[in-house]
Image 1 (tube, rainbow, N blue to C red):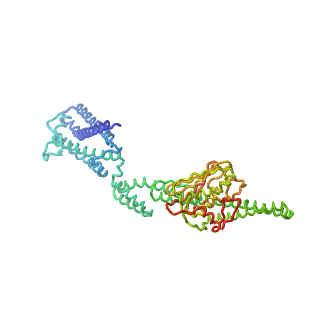
Image 2 (image 1 turned 120 degrees about the horizontal axis):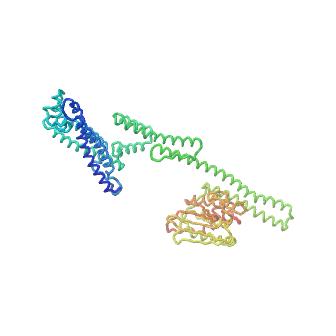
Image 3 (image 1 turned 60 degrees about the vertical axis):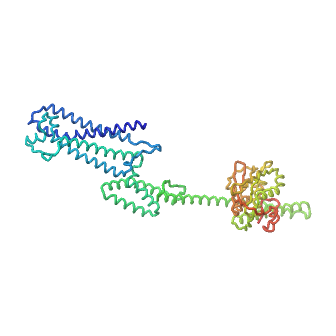
Length: 568
């Protein structure tokens, strides 16, 4: 509704309130006078039909004024409350008083209308005007007429020091004043209600946030319950307080009982083993915190069960895969030993059998040592010699060593390095081991004739190495499963790898405060290594020195067929 239209409605309603309340107060006290005049009809000479018509007019005016007063109050209520720019209702200084004061003053104004009506009635009883209007006898007042007729009624009598007309005028002024104060209280309550500050402006509303804060800070539910009971007892000491207490119990008890019931259902579900059930409660109260804790327990238990089931599955797959990998060269060794026994000593067949036995023995030795490496890396039982390592130089050195293998497999490495410092604080030997495992993984599983992208970038305090290649076999496996031990990208397990390289990379990166993860997008495989970056002027360790010195320090067992694994 337009503000100007609302303002017009408000002022029309407010003017009507003053007008029709005054009309009602002037006419309503005159109705009891009609009973006295009706009693005099048999002894006084006046027209009964004329009296009846005038009586009907009076009652019509009273009813009409009452209806219009109600309509005027409704218009004033509908039109009050000017909107501010921020959408709130404009409130004056009187509106900001306590709503309890508005209610008390309004009730007091309503009570004041009773003595005003009594005063108006007394004035009419001692005034010639009612008799003149209704009986046509202006010589005497109704009081005098009734005294003459033997009623012996005198409400003012000689004690009246002012005229009845002056009393009526005074009562009219009092009516306007009381009506104005009462309307001000009513409109103040309406403005606060429209502004949604009616409850918050009350004493209870101002104390409620502090009580809630006090109870929410307390972890003891029984202490909160005791505070609530004490407040209810104090409120119940008065009739109005009893009504408020009953309303609080009626409206708040079901709310908290529903919260209690939700928490109970969640606890019963968790006890029954249904850890997927979640309690949905909003807020910061005791029940909400309890619900969050129960949800956290259920979520942790659910994750623990999932992790345990996944661990059992991976353990079974690990045993199966390792057994298969160990059995394959072992079976070949046994077979060729039998063939060697039957062959002529010194023959070409015997020499060929010996070469196969040597290759399979190295393969078996490599697999066994890889298992020990994975166990040590996973347990963290590896000494770390911290030094400054230049990742860019290390990556270029590793790519150089794998250039022949890449060329043999028709792979084209593409290296993008940054010009910024890529210094990290790590163990140079372990970092070179990580590089060998990553590039060895590419050599085994990348599609022939494809490119291998190696990117080295810096992001703030991190150095990020990314190795991307297209897999030769379909990657029907998740990235997390691919990080597990003895898991390969090819399900047939016909490649020369052990499935432990990525797992070792992840454990070594974590050991040196770094992070490693893989990403799979179709057949695109991406390995991402993140290491903490340092800013210093100290000369880094040289990768060539690391390579030359690693055999003596790490007890490396050379493996001709798997350069991706260095056995500790």
